[in-house]
Image (cartoon, rainbow over all chains, first blue to last red; front, side):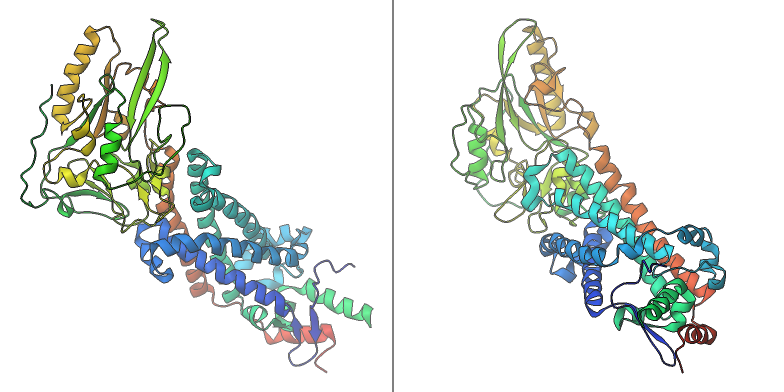
Length: 225
Length: 312
């Protein structure tokens, strides 16, 4: 069996409980840079999206600074996320069990993990978040450049800018919703946050949520030894 | 001849309108003003315009603006387009009338139309950066402008320009500062042929009617008033000799209205977006409240230890 989604650095450590390395230090740093950018973008973007949230521009030093900094954070996020994409895309390729998993969303939400098919490093929900984020970030950077008037006003027509600003707003709303799903899942599924902070999860967490990945790790270890 | 406005007294006087007369304020709600000011308007009669650009000069002069020295592009339009300094420009169009084969020289003074339903104000995200007074004047408050350029996307006439110097949006104010002390706009004051006149909107419509009657008697059967209803009417109106074809006047839009894309962006998207974000957060909160956390059991840990052969 080819362990398609075992990523470099994934490793099992014996003990009580068993611990499993899930994310390398560089992956975690990459993640938190992206996360910080996304939160700052959401705050600055929302402040210009709805009048009731304009006060959020205060976090960035006022309206003008918010308008200046928002696109630059977007550029940083684009490159930072590109790093995550290169790291994670292979393990996020869609597998047969993902369809089954998604069809049993009711069991997912009811935490009936024993009824769900065994999944690899990422389940269908995580993969949806990954590809959703990837797609939306491309849409956001592309539409964002069109409405970055300070540097790119001359390259598009006003009609194109109108369309771009609408697409940018819609994509931003969707990505914030995807982000809520992402953060909520990490909070709801206890034991997940440590993967993003210290890079480790317990064996039980891997057994419960990503058993196929755990089996692959065990298999890989046996073939290596 | 339309009687010109008298000169004001030289003693300082309080402004005749201000904050208390706002009917719209960008990204905010205003209480309906206690009084309704008389609706004012500027009427530009293209048939009387001689293209002298006194209006452009007066506009720069009054607003204390200096246009950069430009280049001769071989046409009379100078500058070629509106800029953050040139809040008004004369646009010259050569048009051959297919019926008479006459070359007609159409000159239109371009600038903010002061729409009754202003797209710039609708699009603006900065509270109070764009305001509309009950006399019809749409004005920019540069202290509050954040330079995002949304007003440009909202405007159906492509009027506002962002300054590269201070990153703020500029457009004609209808000389709100002059109107506040009973004066007309500087361009109207300077116009030597009364192609630009200023007064109440009713007076202007009345005056336009006389002018249109005169033009019709001279063979311009399609002469008419440009006061486009798609933006609720404007407080800068044109008398056109060919009102059936406004586009021949340097692409004056035939039926201007706020772009439906802007309406969707600033309408349903704004509210639906907030509802969607709120709903996702609420569903997450409720889900956690009802089903509780998804915890790893001791059994899971034991199974993992058994599988990995670890723990021993």
